[in-house]
Image 1 (cartoon, helix red, strand yellow):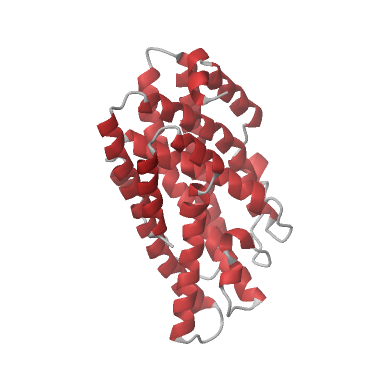
Image 2: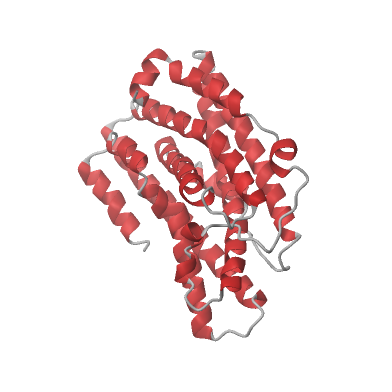
Length: 310
């Protein structure tokens, strides 16, 4: 059933509520379970860290790269879920005096995003106990949220759908199958994935509902907003790639030539662009939803903008 058809009978909101209740989990009892991270294990799989791109590094150094990237991976999700939660709460007001199942589904979505933020704060603190000092993640989630929320709702919803679809793809195709990963890190993203499945369905419902209210000119402007948001994400990734590469060089245990350090920074950026931009843009279902809302020429505008980020 398409999202448009689902809106006609309201049943998809109800199904999201039921699915959410079935998979509900607790940070301490279900995820952490008294465990600690172990620096002997990778955190991110090679398919996400793009380990093959770090051509000068030893296996142990590549494991350290996976741990740094895993830490940033959790922090980036905590960052984006701040603006996602704010937008979801805003959207719930549209239904407040109407479809109460939609209100319940969106309020539940918000509660889960708050829980996810708390989980990722825990992950950051716990990883900090086993990795060397000096890691920096200086991006303020509230500042990012304030900037994102100045953009059109359409653009924010498209970005949110993109994020929550690639979250699922990363877990199913890369994190879950990798037997070398930290079991605790895998569990963090197993439980995160369980709730993101419902979130992506709600994103689609709200995007299609909102899109139906726009004029052609408003939608065209919203596409520019979306392209601007992707560029802003890329700016964050550039800054964090530089920070993470510097942290790696300072803590890898050997002296590194400037040329190799630059190559490592470029490899971090390539991995982050794959994780947060290109893997989502290539998601088949994201393409299907988006193509149902925009023209071919608008699609080419988005593709051209993404092509500049390789």
